[in-house]
Length: 66
Image (cartoon, rainbow, N blue to C red):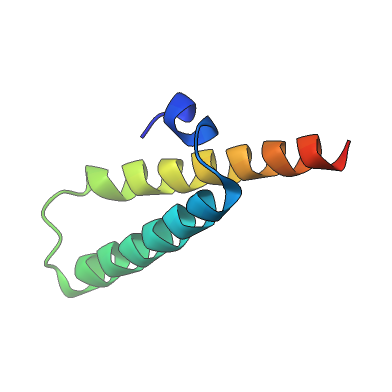
């Protein structure tokens, strides 16, 4: 997921993506705690995707407020 793909989405789609990413991050943390996590790099990727979605959401909100 890159920034250009995110900028093309509506705020509602971005919020849905954010919820899905947060659920995935929770599941990954749970897997890590139980020792079942195989791909540890996925945690970092999900965390960065969450940050990207939040950044685009904030930019769209600031643009709408103008």
